Length: 109
Length: 114
Image 1 (cartoon, one colour):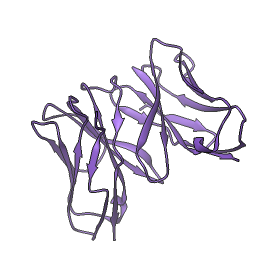
Image 2 (cartoon, rainbow over the protein chains, first blue to last red):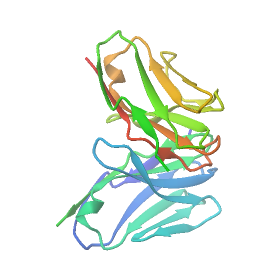
Image 3 (spheres, each protein chain N blue to C red):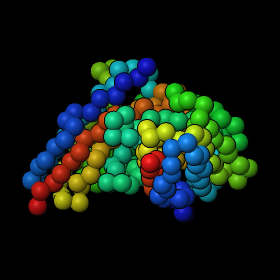
């Protein structure tokens, strides 16, 4: 069974700092990997989708990379802002979605 | 284009009752998946429906069931509610069946069982 781990579980950084969130998975046979953002008590907002044949995707201040062979993905957030504070979840897709446990990010003004 | 909508947004039920949650996918999307999110277990896949047929099922007891209508709207039913069923229930829609397609999530239904 696919296991998805996210480290760290929580992260607190000052505004303006660049940061990296990590996601690792045990089975490299995936279709794609998706990063989501979840605000407290709310649903999930899709940030980036990386197909299994791709190495990275970029959207604004966000850049996600995928290394299938090592079972790892990173989400890079440049010049963090207080509005980036949320829980970030990665999900890998095989026969179904498998979610990580998330990283709770706090950006301090 | 309107996003995924879920009703109701909040629900309080008593142990032993049953509950039905509703999800309307993005227009044109034919796949709807359901997830349960709890602090202890995180996000767990319940099932996926496509063209009114259940295509995939997670590891949940038979008390959890669902269906999909011809307009792609989906309902999820939980019978004989237990305290542990308290959770945020999320649905997601995608254009086609299978986890390879990007999923778009609704705001969720917060179920509290007392």
